[in-house]
Image (cartoon, rainbow, N blue to C red):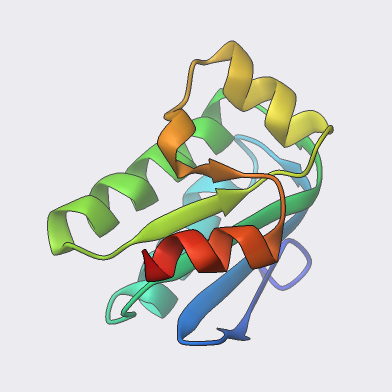
Amino acid sequence: MTDKWVTFSKFGDAELVRLAGEIDLANAPELTREIVRHTGRAGAVLIDLTAVSFLDSAGVRLLDTIVGDMDSAGTPIRLVVGETGAARMTLQLCAFRDDLVSTDLSRAAEELRG
């Protein structure tokens, strides 16, 4: 039951994935499968991490897996992390790809359009 941590909707032409709460080893594998299932045929993907309160290495692997899948498929993707917060801090510590990270949803959607 992943709906506690992830919801799916549309934002413009993009598939919007909103993650919330603690993303860790306990839920990351199941979340990865769920996100891949929902975004496999998407034309563009936005992942909103602004409501994530904790992100461990399993959560970073989740994001890395999704980004790798989207890159392989040629699907544009952006991560929304806000100005502050657990996800932003963890991704900065891991030196996650800056070119994919945006501070707000509208800006991320604009970046997807190119």
